[in-house]
Length: 549
Image (cartoon, rainbow, N blue to C red):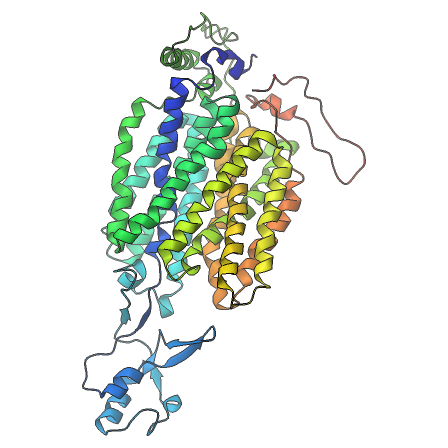
């Protein structure tokens, strides 16, 4: 069968059609960067302490009724307890002075039975202050992000299969609609439970939109433009949304306004349906030759090039002569030993890199006293990372690139353990260098993934591997929370996972300079990697593969 890229080579790689679709797909991913990390601000924990009802206490007792505790070597007011109010009232009425007449360490304490008072120095309100997600309910704060990523997990899995069955374009717009609708409904949440349930459904559409747009672009574009879109264009769209987030949060300091701002722009994407086409590759894999040719002819008209009489030589347009469409499902990822090995290893490497990426991204609020600056720094670091991944994908093999970036991400996290707390800026620099490396890996993995699987299985494979990787993003909030027990434990976990993933990545097949596979047969004939356990080379020649894109 003639290669798809050769069949449409008359279009060129960068005509008006490709430019418009490239731009619109990148724009469609801006809300993903905004929405993925909006929880950094929605679930931020403002300073708080127990509410003290307005009783006639002396000034001394008003200032000491909240116990002082030492946290990370610093004294601060207790967030979850106060001295028993009835005892303090009696002592105050009798004229006793705290610290002189009364030993405060011997006073009985009680919980915040009258609620909490929250600082509004940074935020007017967050989910934490709205629903009191502190003290005994403190676990709900990281669990909120976990629920979101579980929604992303399920969305990635099912959207991949739906996309391979019903097409890339319908799933892209359906997931954008889900993301917009549930973000809007969340504004009216009256309880943490209601918000969390709606957040789960929001997550279903969030990353599913990214995956669908990524695969659609990878199948429409060819050659260097495909690499440019997969590694740089789509990721920069995500990064722009990420960088807009702290700017919006700075001006919209209550959680409902910020959430509303994230949902309304989704309505602007409805007209894109007219301009973004279905994937011709997917249409061909389904035997829909006429529809695929119609899209290509429209593209030729936009690019002002002449169209040959028959675009896809192996498809005459006669259903009897047309090549039968190939059926595939998620079980095909595990049916053959070569594909099973590749899938399992890739899922593990993707899981580790995703845990590192989201762990460091969600930790941004703790990097600097100003969370807006912290978030912007974390977002800005992604731009050079995506540019690096584009250059790497353009010139270097995939497997050693992934291995190197994983090890590069682990190194600064280990070095943080050696930095004294008196040098906080050095810790920030090392963590941001680690974030840069993990972001580079994250970008490489998406492009690598689309190159390893055939058209009939590409979106299912992307969705499945992304699903497994979302287990990493689901546990990332709790990994970061471990710093309350051992300050550097999150860094140890993330860096160790990266090293183990780098070792596992050595066993992945190489895809650099090889054609984007169209059929399952091409995958089974793909060149095998060299086994490090033996000195013999175990390979299968690439005699039946078409020429590179």
